[in-house]
Image (cartoon, rainbow, N blue to C red; front, side, top):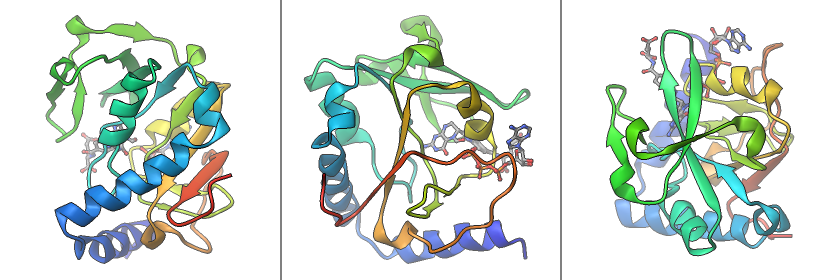
Length: 186
Ligand SMILES: Nc1nc2c(c(=O)[nH]1)N(C=O)[C@@H](CNc1ccc(C(=O)N[C@@H](CCC(=O)O)C(=O)O)cc1)CN2
Ligand SMILES: Nc1ncnc2c1ncn2[C@@H]1O[C@H](COP(=O)(O)OP(=O)(O)OP(=O)(O)O)[C@@H](O)[C@H]1O
């Protein structure tokens, strides 16, 4: 079996054991590690996805951003071109479930924001290394987006998602910071 497919399965089955309550609690803890850091404090406009299990839950992150009066933008994917466009979201009713099981902005209710205008991109993934290698869901969306992006990138990582090594390809873009569960926040 393809190595990437195998790792995605492994990580999912490791995290599947977690209860919903635990998932929320552990995610909130990782999010607070991020919000304690300088990169969060200085960020004015951030890109983030509505997480899908086993990704770290981003609900507390989105609500903290609203609290802190930071702009938060979510992507809408274009499957045919494998590209994404980001829209500033200010309340949950601006999101809708789309055909890929994602929760995405309703274009008519939100303002489009260019990726160049964002200063912190929270990049989703299934597995990471401390060096910033990332294995995603497999669309290659972020590998296409990130070369043109100039701001900081960060990913949120449960212990079970951390790997010593991951298979990499030439097009893969490294993440600047991986916030690993349980690490000292600096
Ligand atoms: N929570 C979350 N949202 C995210 C991402 C993510 O990793 N996590 N993405 C990160 O990139 C983008 C969406 N990535 C996706 C990747 C694959 C498929 C998917 O369903 N693929 C099908 C084939 C679809 C097709 O080509 O027609 C499949 O794998 O069977 C959907 C979304 C944007 N939103
Ligand atoms: N910059 C790129 N240009 C063209 N094709 C790309 C690029 N990046 C990735 N791809 C293609 O997209 C597919 C998925 O790539 P990959 O497995 O690296 O995705 P991923 O990083 O796991 O997913 P995602 O970025 O959506 O979270 C592969 O077929 C890959 O060749």
